[in-house]
Image 1 (tube, rainbow, N blue to C red):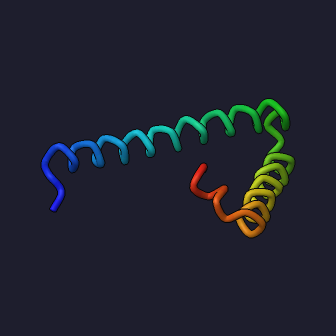
Image 2: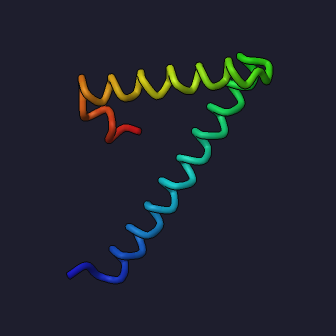
Length: 68
């Protein structure tokens, strides 16, 4: 049975993981906006390309998902 300290550590780490996700999301959003200059069609194509690259990487090397 986990102790209170271990529960607090897991709780903190889960929140830090969520914060990291939002930071990466914000950086990605800014880069896509800079690259596409606000054009929605180009933005969609960039996001789809990123999605397909990550999906392909996950099939080729499943350990990549642990990094993300």
